[in-house]
Image (cartoon, rainbow, N blue to C red; front, side, top):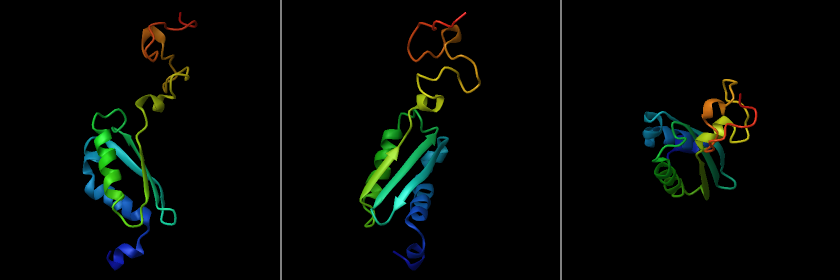
Amino acid sequence: MTETDADRTLRERVETWLSREMPIIQMHGGTSAVREADPDTGEVIIELGGGCKGCSVSDITTSNIEAELLTWSEVDDVTVRVPDARESLGGPDQAESIMGIDRTEGGRGDWGSSNPGKDHL
């Protein structure tokens, strides 16, 4: 570790590593955020979003991030979260879409059900 690395927080070093070593995240329209990087407990929590939601290779990306960060002496536990694409819409209990239109209108988007719901006109 260089003196420059020692002066930076664990969070800053993880963020720098993500942007430098994991460009595939941004190349595929994804985002990454370090939610926690505690040098006292060794816990690092990263959240991937954007294009990572529902991406077929997000499991590989997640595994690569975890494997690398666990080699760092100050990191003992790594959690990489990739929200389910449905979570960004509020899940199956959300009555309206982001645009304020009933998701079940016309049989579209009822989370796998062909029943548009009792309020459907």
